[in-house]
Image 1: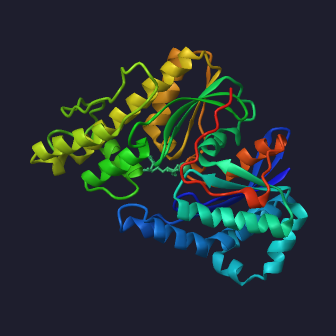
Image 2: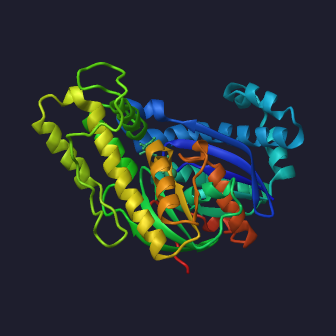
Image 3: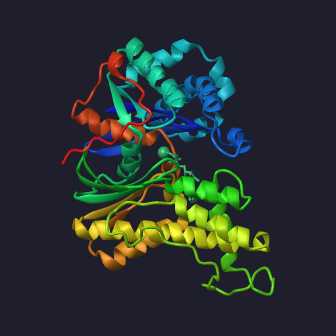
Amino acid sequence: MLILGIETSCDETAAAAVEAVNGKIKVLSNVVASQIEIHKKYGGVVPEVAAREHVLNILPVVHEALEEARVSAMSSRGAERRGNLKFGAINQRSPRSLRSLAMTKLDAIAVTVGPGLITSLLVGVETAKSLSFVWNLPLIAVNHIEAHLYSNFINHPEISFPAVALTVSGGHTSLVLMNGHGRYKLLGETRDDAAGEAFDKAAKLLGLGYPGGPAISREAAKWKHHSPSGGAKSKIKNQKSEIILPRPMIESGDFDFSFSGLKTALLYQLKKDKNWKARVPEYAHEFEQAVVETLVSKTVKAAKKYNVKNVMLAGGVAANRRLRERLKRAVARELPPAGFYLPEFKYTTDNAAMIAANGYFKALKKEYTPYHKVAAEANLELKQLN
Ligand code: KG4
Ligand code: ZN
């Protein structure tokens, strides 16, 4: 089965084609046009600007994804030719080649319908509806959070259930029990800021750039090797920090999270510390520790309670090296023989391969929606079904 995925829920315009056979998913193309450079100067995503960029990018991105898929599906020299494909060149191609590619190859189109920024979502949704109409292809409505979870299945068809999945992104932090494909129970979520949002806000307070997650990680890594005497590359490891931030709700007894108080605690500490600009790596390190410890602790508790076979990590914050390592170690130490899965780096932040992968599992159950009934929904919730 060959599925085209389309994703425009925030500031990434993405399209991908995946080929799936007996649960095994092969990504034939994974094209992402990122708007990070555009939104950087505003310190965050500006919805109106994001939507306009999606409108400009969506067709070239879909076109490139289809071109690449055909090349890599047909010859081993695909990779060489892929490298030469440039947007400019695609813009000049005739629409007819786009049409013939899709008509000969695709089985369905999967598109993110929510949650996300409504003006951004609309571009992907309306494009997918139009393509589904003109190409007469079935349409699959995909939940963005569910799709993040499916980034794990791209390389791991063997993941068995029950499994616990921690999805941490710029807009969401949720712990989900997965009892089978499409069968979820929401165990807990954030009551205020998402983990990625907390990283972004903390980075702003520390005068670091956008997006904040990678910036905080980079600074935090510097602190480990920073000597108190100012020598740049001291070998002192596991140096103890004098800065202590709270681990919010870590002993709350449920599986919910809260990160807005953590950001406020950081703000107060910075206000009290006249010398904070010289200690940015140390603050970044402690902030990252506080978020990671809270996420790992609750995930492990949930996995134990539900006696799961596997633990999965997904979402943009899953790109965080410390989180990946700590959770992996905790699962190995506290939950043997449970397996631990995380997506490849390129499938952690927003992409359309995960949308198409999720689409495949829905297509197996014929979960298609007539194009005129597909609508973008900013606050779409995960459908719970045991
Ligand atoms: O999944 P994603 O691309 O978009 C949403 O669906 O929100 O996640 C983006 C979020 C941003 O908040 C970004 O700061 C965070 O993921 N992020 C990270 C790292 N890389 C990206 N957070 C912590 N550490 C990272 N290395
Ligand atoms: Zn996302």
